Image (cartoon, rainbow over all chains, first blue to last red; front, top):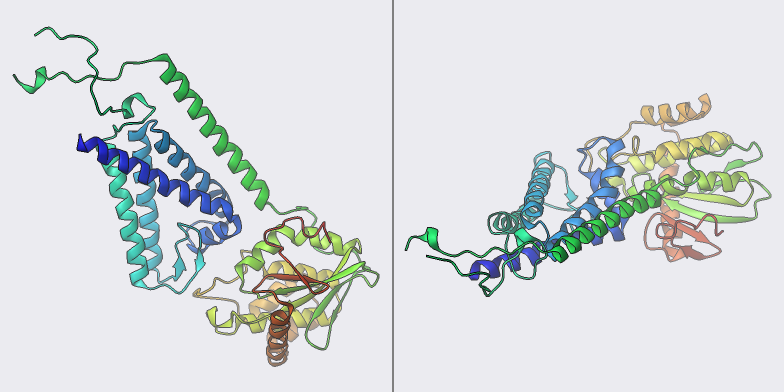
Length: 162
Length: 243
């Protein structure tokens, strides 16, 4: 019983994370482009397409989790994306760059230190934990998908002959 | 009883679930694809393919306070544009509206007073990149070649040239001179940049520009000011056509 509750909480929390993160990026496209460019990982030709696409990809993940459709698959994709984001922050830290991650708005050069990077990574690890939980226990109440649905009470469909 | 006999009810397939699920996927797909297309159009350069200022009637002049006036003598209106060569948002503004502004200048719709500032000096690897870029801008403006100035200004803010804030490198005076030469600046301008002839006065001019920016009421760069009113150019992509 409590597994379903935790799954519901994890699903809704992770949905909120993606929706807020995506919406903040859509609201300020110039800053998103600057944020992506500041990582200095992509060739210039890819900076704009990634900056234009990533926010809507996050919103799609958030919407799927919100309505509870294909939760396990969405959680797996979320986990992969979070691993990439964590790796990218580690890369920036290792190269001695000083930038704002731009995960929830913001982005570009900023006055950040190792502790700020650690906090960002720990936060993303927390989100990753939510995603991993949902990969293992994707079923929760109030979900649309057949593989994502779990009810609090069980309605017997047919009698089972012993 | 072993656990294998435990009755585990699974949700049965139901048509309404498939319909709703399919509908949801469709709506989300439309939102994502539509959103990406909309976003790409929003950040695309306006009037792309036009290039820089091309009309030979356009003049460029270096004024006493270091302000560069670019425009036709009969231009309908004049705006002040405050930028710092290291400022990434200025580069975004240049990317989005630069070619549109060039055509407006060519058509005599507007003349631009460029105030190039240097407050981002400390974020540059060399410690004074912005000041030296201001000096380079003044060198090119002094030659009176408006086409070259427009091309050089665009090159200065292009993502391939603009140094990163807190970056590990920026451009030497020789490299700045190379960029100017490639943009069509005269040998005189190239020499002026390489020797750093205008760097000291650029420092003073940039400080004056910074005070002018503060006086205009704008909070940061890029700042577009027309008749004393600050125009929010970054959020209003139609600001050039509305001049």
